[in-house]
Length: 282
Image 1 (cartoon, one colour):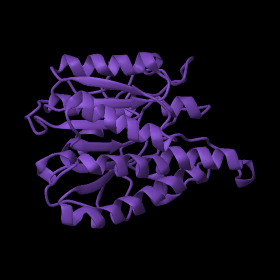
Image 2 (tube, rainbow, N blue to C red):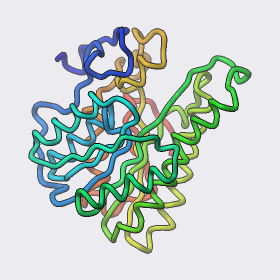
Image 3 (cartoon, rainbow, N blue to C red):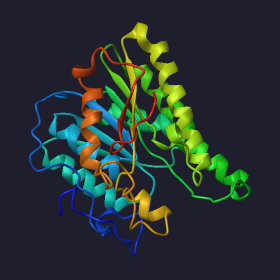
């Protein structure tokens, strides 16, 4: 595998399958050393089958956490993530289903608690995007699917998880650089990511008395299956950042480790911007 600073994205034949990507995203650096920062913790990660979600799952496992991952349809990718987590000596539960359903979200949390004994960290990460060049092209159906997946599910999962969380636990929400600078071809997607920022900051204040922290990560252009699956040409993906390249999932996941661990005990309502050097407010 090439180092992050060397790769140039190429189009893949079968978008959506991480193992088919050229190059395949880097999940975790070979030199990453776990320090037991999440030992004894249980995490539920939506969209954990590939990309950022997979990387977060493996980093959490190396730090000592058991992990449940939700995924929609990519069974092979999910099983690969499970194998990677188990290779770190931790348990991994796979939960297949559509997070647009509030009932499914409740059931997913219940399964996590039943199989792994609780839930200490919730990572709302799953998302969809459908690039359109004109607002006229965004149908009501697309708008609803984007919002139901990208923000409604965050409410559903957080609401269900709170019944099992206690002081010191945390919720981490994935937003995007697109909501801070805007995106002319992802208007509905960027809007949901903006809603996530408001949700995170408000929920952080609501849960502060319970000592449950709520934070988020706003990635820039990261090389994940979502990119070649939704864009026709990815050869220049990430080349316009200050660092001149796209980022790897392995470069984002440590931010989630920080927010999930006691290292961030005085941090809530905040976003970490892992975006290759783009200066944004908030």
